[in-house]
Amino acid sequence: MRRSGLMILLVSALIGCGGEGGIGEEQVGEVVSDASLMKEATAAANDIIRNQTDCEAVKSNVGDVNEKLDTIATQIQTSTAETSLAALRRQVSTIADACGAR
Image (cartoon, rainbow, N blue to C red; front, side):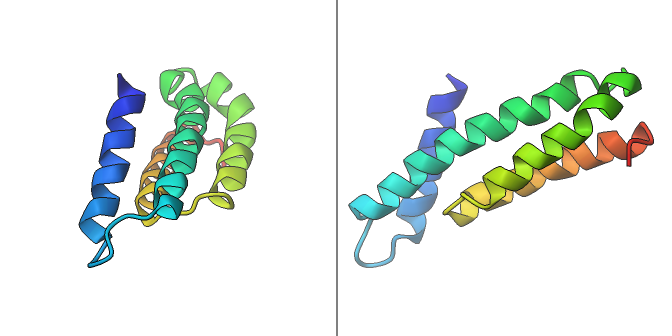
């Protein structure tokens, strides 16, 4: 259910920003690709978010999670996904800071 909701959100954002020409196949492909990448990013960030009360788990995983988010950031193609990824990074950073994992 979440995945389809994310896809609808991303497609809606593109429609709103499509201008006169509307959405082309390339933009749809970018949205589909970014939806898949955001699924990966969310899964990685959830390793930290789920364990936010277990600082030892956060400390042991934050490096790998940040590395994964950095890799995903290089592949993102839409501004909507960039914004979503930035929000995930802030959550991870806030939890890491609270656990002294920086």
